[in-house]
Image (cartoon, rainbow, N blue to C red; front, side, top):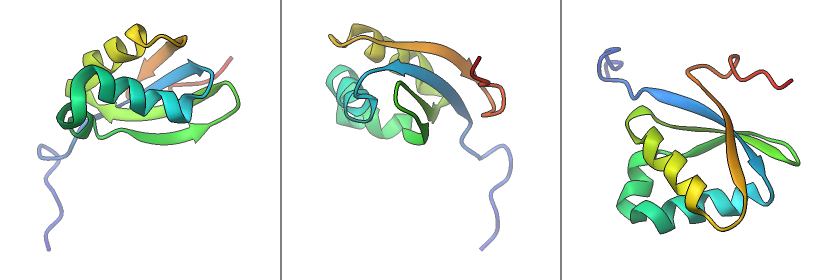
Length: 92
């Protein structure tokens, strides 16, 4: 099987999100706002998780939808930083 060409790869963005109960609330917020089909298009994955923040990766085309869904969720979640690399999300 041949590897994918760079033009065919999925481009990702990494988000630093802070709040409470993020492992449960982030997928619920996205599914509630953009539905199951939109949830699959985001290709959400959790990279790193600490007690009050989490680093997630999402598809570049769905970045605005993910940010909007986190914004309208009743419990407070905020996107602190967005980057194209994990290294760019240094926590200060």
